[in-house]
Amino acid sequence: MGEAINLVNNFKVDNVVFNCGPYNDLENELIKVLNDKNINYYTCVNRVDNLEFLQTKEYDNENDNSNVIYTELNNHKLLFMGDASITKEKDILNKYELSNIDILKVGHHGSKTSSSKEFINKMNPKNSIISVGKNNRYGHPNKEVLNVLENSKIYRTDQDGSILFKIK
View 1 (cartoon, rainbow, N blue to C red):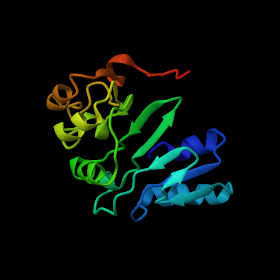
View 2 (cartoon, rainbow, N blue to C red):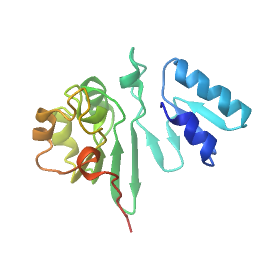
View 3 (cartoon, rainbow, N blue to C red):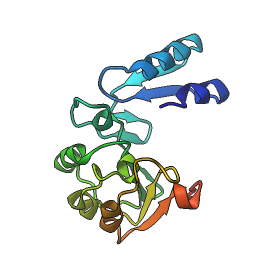
View 4 (cartoon, one colour):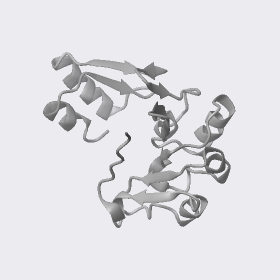
């Protein structure tokens, strides 16, 4: 979220989708820029084109309100977990029938608050991406999360840099 204004100012952006819940200060600043540039924005949506936003309910924290997005591209299943915690993972398991994910963007930078064994076993990801800074102050990714993901090919931005999948 911290770089959203920079992205909007330097790239062609047609639409912005905000997560559920009240806007924070960063989001309010972004909305001012979006209004100035006449860019559409939406909150708490269920679908945009072939992206399905897995909404379960409104939570009392921004991490669980973050957008979780599912899509299929050329018979490949992709799931992007945002900063969702184990609480939202349980709600997703109860509401949606998902499994055998080809590419999982691991929740909350591999934090111990996300990627429960139950959730990962059900999703059974072939490939897992952990977006995490090198030598970050939080110690992400958590060793237990890495152990839970042991049956998945793990890609980490702190070790691998930018990660690109080409789906043909």
